[in-house]
Image (tube, rainbow, N blue to C red; front, side, top):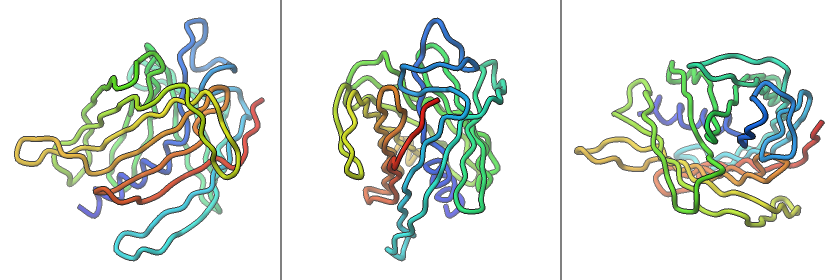
Length: 219
């Protein structure tokens, strides 16, 4: 279970962007004017606050994400590399678009697993949902359930108001006595022309962490 918890925490630190499908563009192109600009050199800075499980003490740091020109193909889909720097630590994750679904592909070392998560679909209506299976070492059978919670809303984060937001909810669920039960919940707020402005994570109903946009620079 400890490794399972670490895996989910790792997911939250890596899922800071979302991508909008454009029929005239591919993930490898430099595109703007959607829910996630993919232009090389674009940056997003986030304030991260996490609660240590069982301790209740908040840990605060800052992550700077930079979109690079590097592309990779996973499972037949093209992904763009996002480089994340927090203190002295640098990690890479990859974002791709396929049929209006927005994917994050990353390696979660704590679980020794590769995860490809569809965490947004800009065409789905409010309350529409989707599910995909995930495999996490030392965890029961699991899946991700995504739901569109709100569309076209405004939200104020760290004193700034963002408009044209899609609010999605990802639930990391595990089977218990034959039924999927939600353990972790990830709420994403994605602003048009900017990307993710806030990610809020809950564990077993209690807030575990949050990542909020400080500033951004779209090239």
